[in-house]
Length: 299
Image 1 (tube, rainbow, N blue to C red):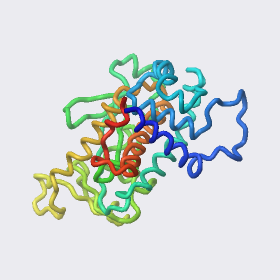
Image 2 (image 1 turned 180 degrees about the vertical axis):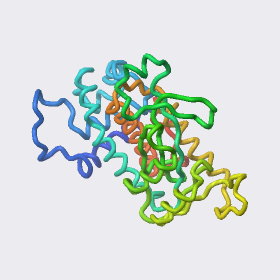
Image 3 (image 1 turned 90 degrees about the vertical axis):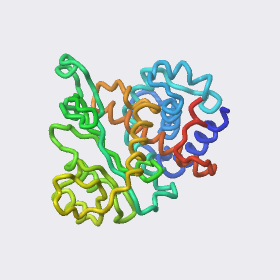
């Protein structure tokens, strides 16, 4: 049962090294030579997430026995942590490259939703944390509870591949403002398309802003709308993006990110989204019946 993860990592490394993060011609960094290049580091980081290793320290104890035949040279904990924090651009580029190689990227439908990403549970953490530029107090409408953390916004395909994502301070940007900003700064689809979301995105401003970009919001009808002008909301699609959020937070460990800095939080988010997109991409290559299933790679 180990061959599926080996095949994914091998295919991922070949494509990343050739097309996304080639190491040839890169200027040499100061300090000692790195044990892993960028493509290898992305593959090791993806394997860490898929195998459910939330702690880098425990992962480096486990990695030689699990992926040592693929990566015989693995760094120590301090070097791995340092290089992983610097690898956010490579992880982001890999995640976006992968989603554009998935056939469902061409589908004219997207799902959008936001979710809290908790970063602390005590006042002492709030006062001492280095996450202040991205974390703040917000309201979790789904659970009717306040939290301290960041707001994660996701735009996915109908099968769950993440096309665009962002983090924002919930005190500085509300859900609608963050959604409009995300649609402006990242390409979520090859062209204008309908976007399924919840009624929290209702508002003339956000609907006009998305219409200017060519997109159409499809959401549930609010009770205070006398003559709603929105399309009929397909309830079953709402569960699709909820399942994607659950996969990221629980199965891929995003809820247990343990980040202490903004850079660390962004890196851990990119790492998990890259792993999810890589699994979906490889499931398409192998013609797996369930494209978002991670069962073949988590052991």
